[in-house]
Length: 73
Image (tube, rainbow, N blue to C red; front, side):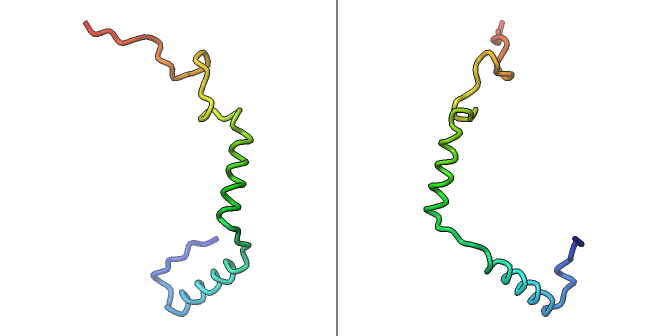
């Protein structure tokens, strides 16, 4: 897909592009936010056992664990 510099287009060309985009968007199926939030919540809860961000990393498998303490003399 070629890159289009909008500044080089005429006002008519810009309007045609906008109308075409709106025609595409009007065909999209819209969902209620409440329904989407429930589905996302169920998806997250289904994978909570494997989620490292929720469960955390085991100390013996943590690559970022500090090897030793810092000693200041």
